Length: 165
Image 1: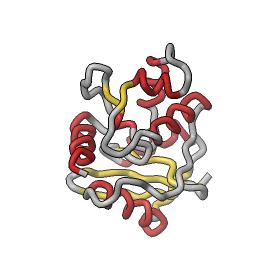
Image 2: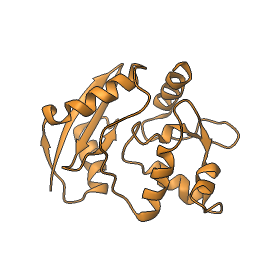
Image 3: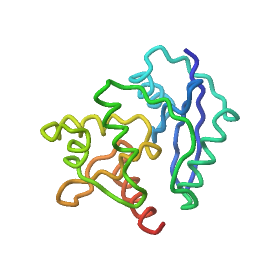
């Protein structure tokens, strides 16, 4: 399966993006291409990566607008691949409004599985679409900024950006 990809730089961040014919399937802050390739293949093992910056340009533009504080909602098509449970959790993440935060237990309750806080946390950590599926809006119940695949610094930055918006 051919997966088109590109790397974009914005505000000191380097992001890898990938898309299928259905939409964006991956956004990550992987340090190097080999890390990006390894991460992407967790979601799409049969992926054959083909660099295509032109095909990813519309997605990069929306992400750039978001990172510059000029966009709050994405219109791009997404192609999210995970287990049914993960996809349910990721769908709940997309319903968190811009500038708001929720706890891991809030997400578990949102999917009607209040006892599954730890499993929901694991699914949030496995989110393949940083920023577009806003896992950065999930914080600890006590308000603590908790882990983020893009790094705590990026999570802080995104939450501050949304506070200003």
